[in-house]
Length: 368
Image (tube, rainbow, N blue to C red; front, side):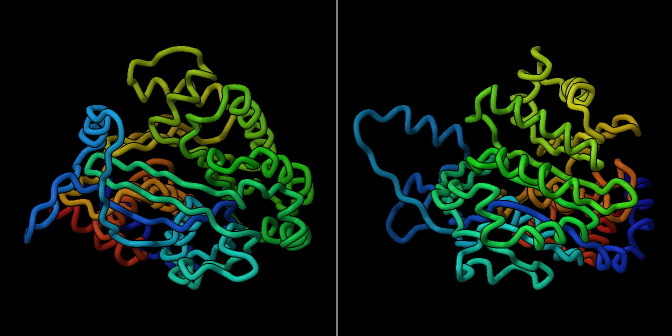
C-alpha cells in the first residue's frame, strides 16, 4: 500500500494547476445542518455522557414505554446537503464549481457564507433543514425540505433560465447530480436534463457525469427502476460514474440482481456493474471501498482515524476526492486512494482539505 501511495504522491504533486483549470457543474439540493450529540447521562459539575452508538440509542428508546424526553447538545450549525458539501470539498482542492441548488431565494442563506469562493451559486429556492445525530458508529439524519421538494425542472428553468443551465453544463468538465433520494422531484429533474441539456451538448468527447443517490430505502421498487433506466440514458451521452455506500448498494442489488450476496461486496459490485450499463461503479464504506470499471476491480482500505471529529459529510468528501482524481486523469485505483484520503482528513479535522494538505497527509501515511 505504501508503494501505491508513493506513486500517487508523484502523480498528483504537479496537478494543482490542472485542478484549478477544471470546472464542475453540480446540483440540486441544499440544506442547513445542525450537528448534535444525544445526552445519555448528565450530573452536576461534570461533562455529559453521550450515547456512543446508534444501537445503544435505539435500545434506550425501545426500552421506554409511553412518553419520554432526551436532551441533545448542539455541536455546530453548518451548510449541508450532498451537493454543497461535495462542491465545497472540490472547491477546496482548487476546482471551480457552479452550484445549482437550494441556497435561499431571493437571498442566499447565511449558512452558505462559509462556502469556498470557488463555489459559484445559482439558487432556485430555500434550503431544507436537517438535524444530524452523531454517534461513534455513524449518524442519523432527520430532515425536511418542503420548498425544495416542490421544485420541478421547469421551476428551476423559470428561476435560473434554460440558456444559463445549458451553458453551465456545456462549459464544465464534469457534472454531478447528487441526492436523488431525498428530493421528491429528482426523477423529473433528471428527465429535464436528458430532454433539454444533453441534446444541446457541444462536446467533442464524452464528458464525465457523476451520480450519488443517498439513502434510497424510502423509495419504491418502481421509482428506483425508473431512475436506473434514466441512468442508462445518461451513459449514452457521458462517461457515467455511480457512487453508492453499502446500504444503497444492497437496496439496488435486491432490485437489479434479485439475490442475496451475503455481505460479499466485491461480488455484489461485480454483478451490479454488469447490470447497470454504466462506465464506472464506486462502492464506499468505512472499511473497504471498491471501483468496478473496464480497468477491472480495484479495492482500497480506508485510512484509520482514531478520534473522528465528524462523520456527517464524510461520504460527500469521499465523492469529491474521487471526482478530483478523475479530473486529474488518475486511474481508478489512484482515484480511490485519493478519495479515501480526502474523507479521512475531513473526518479527522471537520474541514475539507486543500491540495497541499492532501500531499502532506499521504506522506504521513508512508511514515506511519
